[in-house]
Length: 427
Image (cartoon, rainbow, N blue to C red; front, side, top):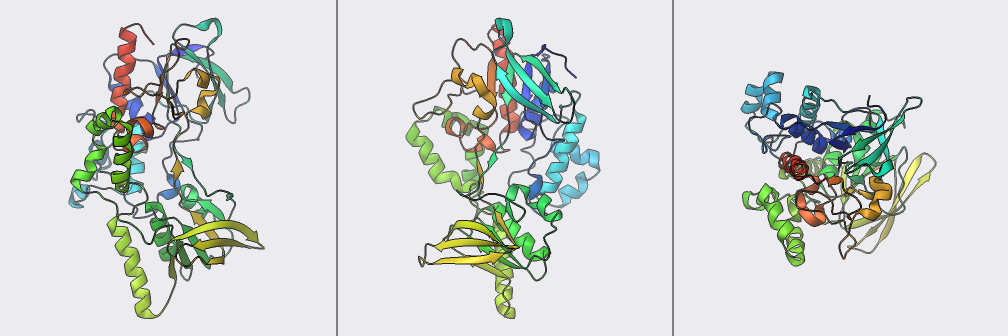
């Protein structure tokens, strides 16, 4: 464990796929940089609550932690398959898209191969300008969970923040044992002790909502699954070749250098490549289930299109959801045993970590953090360390900012930037 005021070239805050990819890039860099990564969870976890059986990735396996940066990397997905003895079988699948479960196993494998392992159960509680104004550094205060006297401080020449997306619920809705966000779905489902699930509602129209509706219908015999959708129906994700170019590394340059009208146009025309859309296979499967029910004269799968949830409250052992139909302008209440909100995420908020350093980070006219092309935050001259963001840069770097598509290239760019500033003698 690092003693007080040890100094590192790179301190990573959060250890999901993005900072795991950065750790790999640092390890493969010929010019050595000292680094340490901290994660408040007890182990590596990436959307564990949505690792439902058969749920597939929406990006190619080649967009892994390293390949787009270094095709020869020993940390690529193909290397994982070879190590696991499944390379021939995966090739025989004739599929570019592994399941989420297998991709998560790949992430765990890659983490296990690192020489410098992350520190888990460790939370960054404060960033501040260091005592004695140590040149080019920021002080990082940490707390180690479940350890007496587990607080300590280190110095960082560069900080890379990657704390992940924030689950989003409708206003006024609070989670409890029967009201879940999709991010916690599978863990809560496995731990369910609320008796028989007779009626469950799934709110949302994106990939997670469709997968959860399918899972509950298949895995809970007899349960009535009510899909509450803000749209008229599930919309298919546009994964055609030209549309997918918006996730290419070069598209980040186009977006970053573009005007505000061009950036808005990219979101307007290409948001359907990833946001609030569903893979065709999942849509077809749900429609087939509903069609077969009509054929049999049964009804366990129902859809409420163009409908908003207006409130949720507990009534004895049931949960009552109030909804408003935009089609009929009717208001209805439904009593359910369980409601899952697959209502997406808010972007990473760096301000939750920056603390007192936030006032030294410059913003644009819209109040958003100013970020350079190399993902380095623009700061005042009084702050001479590097602060980098892996997430929270949708406004500056485009659609792929919180997705897996560019993490390998982005990690390489951050390492290159850190090295370039070191060579110039500027932090």
